[in-house]
Every structure is written in C-alpha cells, then in structure tokens.
Length: 86
Image (tube, rainbow, N blue to C red; front, side):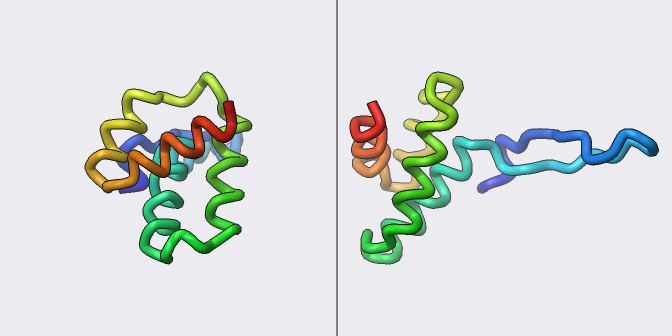
C-alpha cells in the first residue's frame, strides 16, 4: 500500500538516478494501521504520525487520507491525530 502514492526524488545528478519514496499520506496510513494492530500502545508510532502531520500540514491530501483510512478501518485514529495537531 505504501507505494500507491509514491513520490519520485532525484538521488544523484551525474548520472541522474531516481528513487521512489512513500508519500507522507501513505506513511501516516501505514503507521496508523500499525498503531491499531499493535493495540494502540506504541508511543513511537503515534509520535511519528503526529510529526508527519505537523510537518506536512495543509500539503496533505486529506481526501486520499480519509478514503484509505476508511479502507484500513482507522478513520477514528486519523480524526484523532488531525484534531490533536490542529
């Protein structure tokens, strides 16, 4: 799932090499799913999610987040983190 919305980054210029990284949205969703599956006790997973949301802010594709969160069964956690981070 994490690479559905991947982001292309140039790794080197000469010769040009590109890598793909997971989008912020997919990172958030994966960590929310891991948090849920782990019994919602991992402070590390939660802090990571909060950090990504705070750094990305308005750049996050919230429509995508809600659609995928519904599929993963973590909409409640998504709403919690969005409310917590403002």
